[in-house]
Image: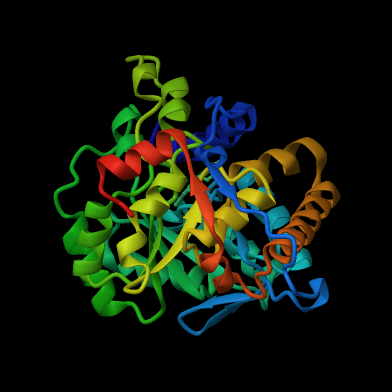
Length: 347
Ligand code: FNR
């Protein structure tokens, strides 16, 4: 099989496996966080503002559909449906890694469809740190992107039997991208989270936007391990930092760069908790895909609208008029997360 066919097949397998992956984690670190209830919030639900922004980009909603797919006929169809959902609900949306479309013009349509379906939407392009530098511009043009996501997915590549093994030049490529790309560049993980060391390193490279995409939801070690019949990597299923821990690791950089959260976000309470730990907006991937595949577009739209309502309800209870006010709300940190903070000297 040539590498293009292999890539197309991989895209379909990812969707199939994620549709089967109900959380393999039994416990979420979001459950180690508790807001403190206050009986007199002194706000009006109608006046709660759930909009947010970064760079010069206004987001009508604090959640976005995170990078998933494109690159095969089937995933192009999924992208079209996701774009329809994003348009109806007012969400920003990232396309999946565009490498397939950059190497094969016909497959570019499986990403372009997102811009066609959502002409005025906020769309993020998506590439890996390993692609030739001129591909970045092409990826941006392909979807007329408002921002460029660059994914870091070392564990996935290593467990994937056809994956990359040489990661020597990634930081140099990121530095080059910063020099040539005019739109915001968001460096994102893919579900393994970030540490303060990673964030500090990215900040020194000149990166201003990161999506810490932590452990707790879609698990690409598990996914690739299902595809890899050669070696069993099951013992690595718990690799990486959870989304909550990654956000805590980011605390000292919140006034130096913009942080997005994603990974294992299950409901509006997790979204609001993420924002209280400093996330500017929250990405959701696997749960939206699973809802779409199981119940269709209308049910997914309803779920997102219910979630937006849920966010507004929780913000009202907390007396937070806008997303950034959430950072002022007292939150209790317990158990494993508390222990991690102590060991890593995070206040
Ligand atoms: C992903 N993710 C992803 N990320 C990325 O930057 N480029 C990509 O091509 C993909 N592909 C992809 C396919 C599928 C089917 C899923 C579910 C996810 C990772 C995604 O953007 C996100 O970082 C993680 O999935 C964690 O979020 P959830 O799924 O736990 O909400």
